[in-house]
Structure formats: structure tokens, C-alpha cells
Image (tube, rainbow, N blue to C red; front, side, top):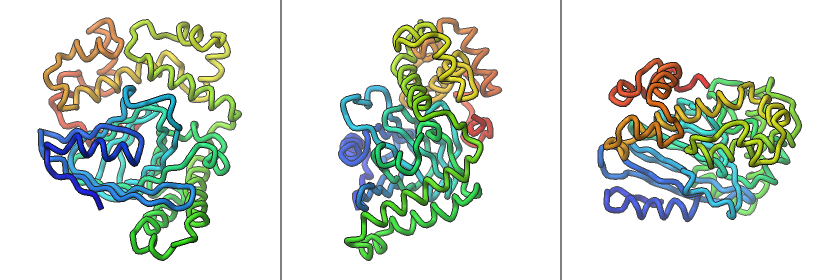
Length: 319
């Protein structure tokens, strides 16, 4: 068990975390000491990580994503406390027993008020696709503990992640790891029975579009036309691919910029920045447009949102 509990060691913790899992930055609230623990184990083809952490923001940013490194997926199971997880354009309030699928090729924002703990089940794409052919369509979508068989499956994973269970499993790790993966993918298949039946190619290309948006979200010229030109898709094909999400590309870009701005507004590292500076840094070119779009999304003006504790607002889990 690894433990860090002093502010001066936050960077050391971030380095240690990146040596075991896809790189991310932990930032404690109010300059408080970072209180975090991590235990990592392997069950055959999957990696298990048990995490606990106090009030902080955990961000995987564009700067952390190296396209030359192997892409990985991870099932993130909230085991204690409450957190907010934002990924693939979706915001979720996570309660104990909830699970969300995360893609290391995309940015994420994870916020905890108070002590939280989680189990991460990390797997390579090729193996995951044996159980879940199009994982991209599930990324960022949280399964509630009371949804389908989620609680049963996540309880099984939590039990198997305990040190006592790992010690007993011994040489049977490969078989147990595959059973664990089958349990989690079954939870998703039964929890989202009405998910689109679009082909795997369509979902993979939508993932390419989303990654392009993430890489260029700060560019004010980002638009469906610029995306089509950069990816060498026709405008019609671009619309067809993105339509499986049930949202237009323009509305997604706008919503993604609003949420990125909201994350910065709530991040202590950006308290010194003006609202306009934050808005313009995320591709807005009009303060009035930013304020109007922000209010439509959150029912709050940006300044009020920054000063008000919106952690438990239901709007955060509505997309």
C-alpha cells in the first residue's frame, strides 16, 4: 500500500500514479495535503487498482495523452464516497456501486468532495472487444448501482480486488480476470439494452471525431466543416457518423466547451483567472455567447456557478 499525505509530495504522487496508470494530475482542494492511497495488482490480462483519495480534482488533460502509447480502457467503480466524473462529453455523479467506462485516449475530469475510493479494472482494447465489440459507445456512460445487474457485478469485482481474495486466487488469475471482465461487460450489455446497433466501424470513427474535437477544442475555428476537412470525411458522412450519439456535432462542441469552462471555474488552480479569460481559452469568442450558453446548460450564470457549491446539483448527471 502506497501513501502520500503531504503537500510537498503531490508531484511525487502524480509521478507514482503515472507509473502504474494513464497519467493524470491530482490537485487537492484549498491547498490541503493530498491524502491518497493506491494498491495495484494483476489478474492475468487485466490490471486492478484500488484507490482512495480525499477532496481533490483528478484531471487527464490533452497534455497527458501521448498518441504513441498504448490505448487502454478502464472500468471505474466508485466504492465509497461521492464523486463527479466527466468523460466523453458526459457528466455523472458517482455513488457507491456505480461504474463508468473510461478511455485513456480521451480526457477526463474527476472531482471528489471528501473521502472517495474506487476500484479500476484496466484492460487493453483488443481483449475488451472480445466481450464488448464497440466499447466507444459506452464510454462516459455510468451504470447506477441499482441498474440491471450492476450491483451484483460490481460487488463481485470489489470482493475479488481485496488482498485476501487476490492471495487465494494465485495462479488462477487469468481465468478469474476474464470472468471479472465478462461480469462487467454483461452489466453494461444489460444496463443499456437500447444502445444503438450501429456498426463497430461507425463507433470507432465517431471516437476518432471525438478525439479530434478534444485535441482542437480550444481552437475558436473548430467547426463541422473544419473537422470534415481535417479527417477527410465528407460533410454528409461526418453527420451520419456522429448522428449515432443522438446529438448534432455543433451542439456537442458547444456543450463540451461549456463543461470544460465549468471545470476550470470550479478548479482552485484557476481562481486567479477571469471569466472571459477562461471562456476564450476554450474557443468562445464572445463573452455574451459564453454567458448565455452557460446559463442554458446549468441554469446558473458563470460567476454564480463559480461561487456556489453545485456538486450535488442533478443537472450534472443529466447528459
